[in-house]
Image 1 (tube, rainbow, N blue to C red):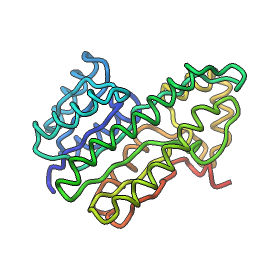
Image 2 (cartoon, helix red, strand yellow):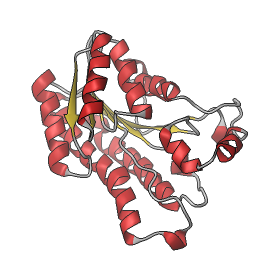
Image 3 (tube, helix red, strand yellow):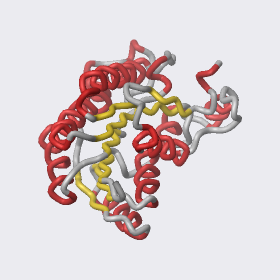
Length: 248
């Protein structure tokens, strides 16, 4: 398909934004979602400057009405949905388990897990009617390992990877592929908040065999690939994009 229709949640910063730009540069029709109108409209103008047909939809992935609306508006505008990138996420409250509360756990899981489930529910609804589609959930290399002081975030990303594999099996015969991309240490605002100091960030870089943090563009390139026809025999897979961080 020459101009696939792409929907990206959490698209206003970091990996989501870089992914929107990468798809737009390839001529895709791109719908970006988030909760800040000014930033969303500015991003749409940038995407259109690459020749892409682009739209912004204000949506909170924790709210099923918002999710249903973003998918239905995408289809109303472009007639179909070919690729969905479920990127919206939060690092939650970083700290020891003794400091977590019911509220901090719920806040993290509502965005990182419930948001993915609701998004897939409505994306699949449309893709099943088409008989085709590709869904990419953004996880983390912490989705298959542990990390001190990040237990709730880690648990949420483990859930994303398990859900991804299960839904991939559920949909394998329907023409819909479901995969996850798992960033390693990537130079985003979330990593800056998570590490807290430049010293902590530098210590993380020292653990990456390629000797640098990932860039949002590195992740975007991987997402564009796994969404493409070149990856048509890949489903139920978790793709690490981490500079060798998990190879040790």
